[in-house]
Image (tube, rainbow over all chains, first blue to last red):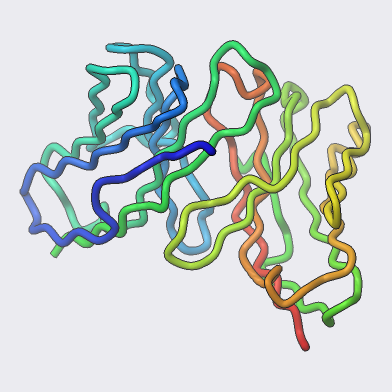
Amino acid sequence: DVKVTQSSRYLVKRTGEKVFLECVQDMDHENMFWYRQDPGLGLRLIYFSYDVKMKEKGDIPEGYSVSREKKERFSLILESASTNQTSMYLCASSFRDRLYQPQHFGDGTRLSIL
Amino acid sequence: DQQVKQNSPSLSVQEGRISILNCDYTNSMFDYFLWYKKYPAEGPTFLISISSIKDKNEDGRFTVFLNKSAKHLSLHIVPSQPGDSAVYFCAASETGGGADGLTFGKGTHLIIQP
């Protein structure tokens, strides 16, 4: 079974803080993704990575950065947290070279910025 | 510009009957379509998918239909069960899921009435 693990289920931070969200997968997937989910907006792609040290911007990268130092780990960084970054953050992973395979998601981190 | 649209925010169906969830898309480059199910405070769970070379895919109680000319897909659940009550997201990829993030609809909240 695919396991995508996000380090925190709930997190509360203050505006201006630097925030790190961590994600680990155990399926040797090349691709890893960060999405945020907001009510009425569905899931939106922030960043993804198809290999170690590689990254691609998604649809809403502003205010975020990412780090992929190891194949199994993908970190999302909020450089200076703001209240509009209060959201549910979801990490996912998938194979790069096997077509028509789904992405598998972690259970999410509910982040509140006060 | 929303490329994947789920026009029904919610749907109520009686237990035992058929649930039909609909999804429309505008991007003709999409070649892989997926349905995810999401409970509150959990990550999305992959349900079923279909590639653009097929028009139907079945897995137990779940069937996905794809109409490329109408740019429309639907998820049929037969028979509907109380545990099916959740938010369902339609998603699509341009690269068979191998090299890009997914584009999601805003979701449909399915409520199964006893």
